[in-house]
Length: 325
Ligand code: 8YV
Image (tube, rainbow, N blue to C red; front, side, top):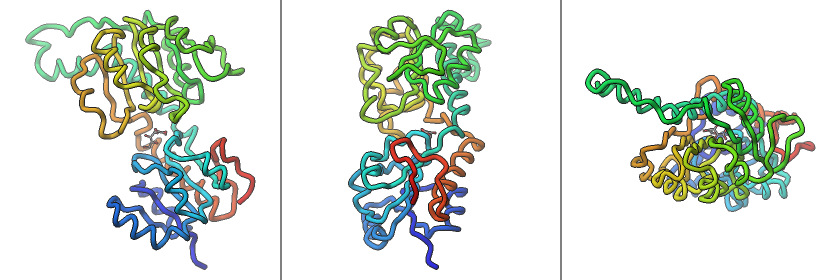
């Protein structure tokens, strides 16, 4: 029997490709546009599965989806699936899967690490030591920031948001949150208005899904409301923050500092970031440990192989609930 045809939209972990090859005929979309067209011309009509996400840089948008009349399942490497047109997938009965839960604790760890690095300047402090300045010039400066006198406003309170909030509370920080609706199982105080919450706190932690609904949600108005002691941390998607507004707020000291793990146009981020002093920059490492990425990769495989075996996928996204293949 011939195996069903699956397309990887870019380089995938070995763990993923090698296992998928047991149940699918796997093709990988080449980087060069002309090579892509040549491959798609040959296989697009037969593709039933797509493995995507990670940093392949390919958007599984309406135009790409239109190329695959027999497509049934998309396995996304990552919990966020803002690069996939789920509305079109849902209309066509294509199941989209993602990788929730397996990365929750790792991303929450990273969020606290980024917050601490930003507030206590551990990056610059280490650079100071490595540059030999400690013996020459004396102690690194006392940091203007501390977690000891801060209140954390969570922007988003999903699974990862709750894991971050739990950690921040264990660090002794009062925590409040803003999200689309109040969560019945979350005890932290709720704000239905982001500006009101920004006024009430001095530290914002952004962990809300990307996409059209949250684009530029953290804008000049929110940053002004956060105020001069304000610290903004973003571990969600670059698009949630109005980057020019944030750069201006950092340069003008409208807020004190920011910590970013995500950016517009990753990995080719705006080079202006390199000259903004009061910002900590991470290259999207939220889930980036071998342990956690292996867990994510295995879940991508399990979801796609479920289609090949006629079984239920483990983690379909809410917009494309599984009702049978
Ligand atoms: C990864 C992520 O960086 O899960 C997500 O949505 O943003 C991160 O875990 C990405 O998915 C894979 O590179």
